[in-house]
Length: 470
Image (cartoon, rainbow, N blue to C red):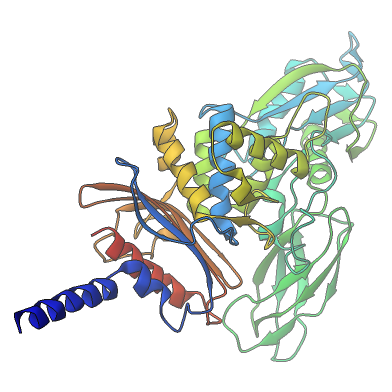
């Protein structure tokens, strides 16, 4: 009898223990029974794996891919690194202040020029002062935006057609301007009618629209654009609220360098500088001799990666990603960026065979990364001299950025620093847990849950992390 009682007690403990296992609870439910999941939780102090499920399986990471981009840049360039944009001349300045040549804006992929997120939006005032300080009152040439530092790919070839042309998928070029985003103001009428286009900001006179929008009963923006880089035609589909005198939607600027060259030319002309040539852009590496008359610096990398990771800024991430491939005399490309990133982390001992990276933002559904790679990356960065800067770039649960509502009001409110990721049928989180005297690194990636909404998966992930941190 005692033996039976003891056996029953052991069985109860085993069954109860299994039912309380956070991984088992997370995996074995109707929502996740057919999902592709990779997860890993590791103690940073001991290096011990606490929880795992298919940790080496590469799964679609969505925006958690930004962790790879920002960590690589931080390690390769340092926290104080700044993008440079130079004003250059390819001719001589005569004694009577005439530049016999072109004034060139040479970019290196700075995503903050004129950005609404970071930097000085009035930077053209500084550029005007630099031209005047150089003694130039007339330019017998063109204002050229030289975007040749990056190749002409613009939009990553692994992105979906449905994303191209939209502001969140703006192209990455050697010269970026105003977040490479235009704002289209519309006026909507009765339900079922086509909204009227009022104006575009900034002014892009050659850009035309095929307007297939409808005014409906919705109360939000469901409009979207179709359009390719360098092409001056955009198709607009979807709907906006009816009977609105003013409603604004956003899309990507097809040639941001050209818009910058025009704005700079206007600034110069309106302040007394005569320009005999045109405002234009170019993408071919020049061999002409030039002289730098001014260097514009971006905010420091530590600030840029905060914007990338906390708000999940695709535009900044893609420019930083390509910048990793920048070499003297050679155009940066996404292919070269991937090669350099893989080589860097392989040299640090990370399992790059579990990293399939095609862009810097995670927008591509072709990307795939394992939870194991992410946790190895986080563990490496935890020991890096850049550890504090990297952690400061991450959103805080229940407090900031894309995590402001994640775990809010729970025991892990304010206790997690992480990056989230969401695209169609994907939900992912990766970062650090600082709770109950523990320092943990984690990655949870869920692909194809049995739901059209990933919000249910978010709740499951929240509960898993709460239980994992106990």
